[in-house]
Length: 88
Image (cartoon, rainbow, N blue to C red):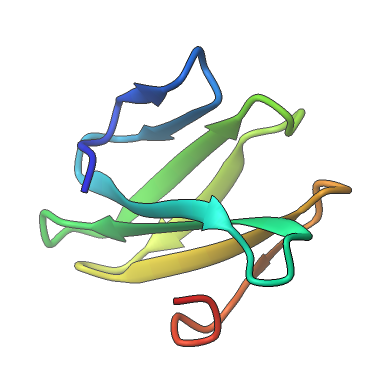
């Protein structure tokens, strides 16, 4: 996993704060979306902030301690949570 507050490839993606780790960033099985999976790792309630170059607004998610969140980000920049097993 990558540590948070790290930017991937020329500002393609950034994830904050430091207690949120990026677990996966990949194309969806149907090749129509980006799948981003991250986890709170310090045992604290946290608001994660995901910034994507192609998305005009930050994506904010409230996480419980150690929670794993998986998001599907469509080409039209709609975002929805997906079950972990659906896009593993």
